Image 1 (cartoon, one colour):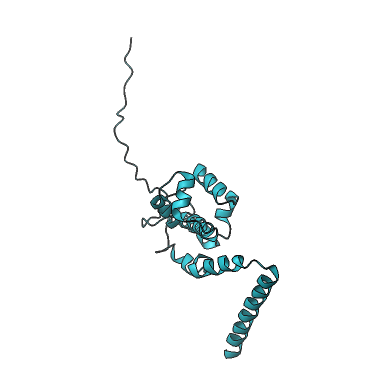
Image 2 (cartoon, rainbow, N blue to C red):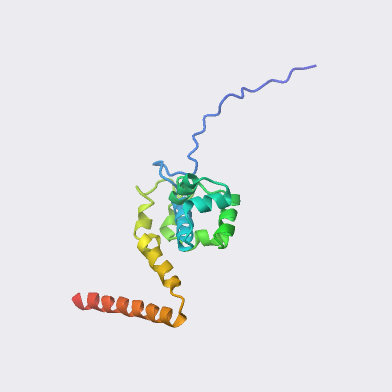
Length: 166
């Protein structure tokens, strides 16, 4: 019987980026998904600890998902959608084109700080989340509607002042 040659099955030298950018920063899509998890969790008034318990994680793991430091797998994303009562597509909604274009799969180079794009998004600010939660705590629909109209009119007044100042 002839002996078949064996191949050296030593360690393969492949550098795994684990979905990170060339600079080692989290993938901007992972950062976006994490921000959407945080947004929905906060809108529901749920702590990281409670969310973690609901899906079998520690609050530290939830923190890493929310920062985009850990990638969210498909089954975990499904679990998150169930606990947070949103469709899976919710986590990808409102994704800016620059985030989609800056995915490491789309291009080889990255901007210095992909998370900086989200700092300017008012939906990721705690103040916005607290305002929305306070708004929904107003139980009288007529009062809530008047509050909504007041906020819109104040925004219009500020917008007109900025235009007239130019």
